[in-house]
Every structure is written in C-alpha cells, then in structure tokens.
Length: 364
Image 1 (spheres, rainbow, N blue to C red):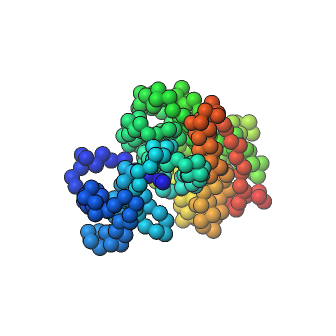
Image 2 (cartoon, rainbow, N blue to C red):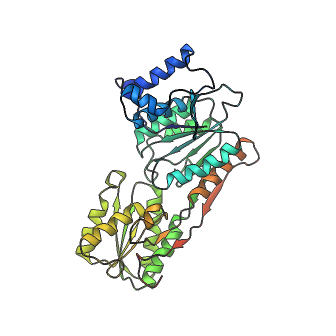
Image 3 (tube, rainbow, N blue to C red):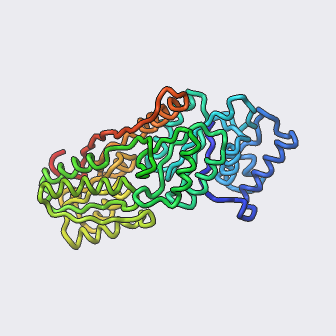
C-alpha cells in the first residue's frame, strides 16, 4: 500500500477546505460503521458530484486518508476501508524533493516494486525543495514509531542544512537511512548517487572534441549535484584550455534561468551550453530557437538525466543517462537488507552513460 503526503502543509493551522470536509465525511462514515473495514467506499465520481468539487480535490482527500492508514486504493477496483493486519506497521518512508514529475516517478516505481514484493508499505513525502516542508516531514517521520527505514533526498544539499538537528535525531533512531541522488556532507552515512562530476567531465570533453571552443555551464548552485557537475565541466574545460564561464542558479530561479542563459549566450557568443539537467536544457533550446539560433549548427546544448523531456521536441537532447528505476531498486533493496540485518550499509556511486543526440554537433 502506498501512502502519500504531497502537500507539506500543516492543515490544522488552516481553515476547513473542501478536501478536509470530504475527509471528515469519510472518517465519520468509518467511525459510525457506515463504511465497514474492508468494504468499498463511494467512488471518486460519486464524491465529486456529492460535494460539487473536482476529482482532484476528492483524490487529495483520499490520498491523505491513505497516508493516515484509513483507506486503501486498488487499481481498477476502487477505494476500500483499510483492514487492520499484523503487518500494517511494516513501512519504509521515502522523502524526496519532488514526487510527481520529472525523473521522480521512475525512482519511486523502482522503490515500490521492491518493497511491495517484500511486504512493506510505502510512505511518500515531498519537500518541494523547501526547508520548511522538509522540517515538517522529518518531524513526522521521527515521531512515527512504525517506520522501519527511510530513503531520503535532502533539500538544498550544497548548503549547510537548516534541519541538521532533525537529521541527527533521525539517525539516533537507529533505523536504516539511505540518501539518494545527493548527500549531506558530514551526515550521510549510507548513500546511492550518480557519478555527477565524472559524467559531466566526459560530456564536456566530447563537446570540445567536436569543435566547441567557448562553453557556458548552467548549474544549480544550492545542491551538491550542481556543484559536482560544475566541477566536471570546469576540469574538462581547463584541461583543454577552452574558454568557459558558468551561471549558477537557485531553486527559486529554476523556471526562468534559461532566459538569462540565452541572453548571455547571445551576447557573449558561446558555442556550447552544458546544462544542469534536461529541465533546463529543453526550455533553453526553445528560447534559443526563438532568438534565431540553429541547434546544433550555431550552438550545442546538453542536458542530464535522460528524462522524457529529452526527446519531447524535434530537438533531441544529448544527455546523461540517470539510472532512475535502478537507483530506486538499489535503495529499496539496501533498506530491506539493512532492516533484516543482512547488510550493514551502502556507499555506491553509479557510472552513467552519455546519450548522444541531435542537440550537439560532431556527427554523434
């Protein structure tokens, strides 16, 4: 059973909203015996009509009741009142910056596939890359006695964590904690990450080899992946004595940094852009095309992650293959093995393949 809290808000501090009214209705139905253990409740369509709200609002109420252990959704069958079982406390929590978009659904799928087979429930938390939401969820995890292990992607990992004390409290619980994608230096004891620096080093070398002479890097400066990717970019550029510069952006600038980068490229005549990920590279390509640039004839552009975005348009991104589902499976297998005491820990860095497509020149 998957239980999800996507919103990160302390709803007790907010006035009653539509989804909370639906939650109260279902809880009252369970308490009164109207909805009995193991029985199906009203469908999402029925609840939507009854309360005159969207299905999204209904789904949020149901998802939160799943998180609280009161409901269970079965694909193609409906939503049921949860049965109380002896194994209901077997649970692994997953705390990531995002859940529902970009590479995260595949990471979650890898985790869920393994732990469902092992008979564990899955608690999903999303911080939205916010310290406040991270604190809220860390406190929830720390205070939940039924969590057997935690898989974590920390918020803004390049900066000193504002929740360092909570991380230390979590570690003191003496349950397995595995960091994924990135780490908190001085705190992370177990981790599964990609070789960010090495991958971007090879990617940058390939651009220089193809004839690119002036390179711009666009990297996220508040997480450790961004710093490591920049280090690989800088190392390759310096070794080749290529001209290079870099733009660093924060989480808050994510959605518009490509506009800034396009202006710099146009003004300074860069012939290659090495982007933090596909989520930056694709809108940069679109913006550059609007400005009259030909890709890759005028400028080569690369991403990272090999996400669905990388092949979404006629510009197919040259990118780094992030082992999304594999990473999730590795983290889940490690968590289960540590729970069972058959493994003491993990320190894994995964080498990533470069996927060459038509956003870069050089005949790849």
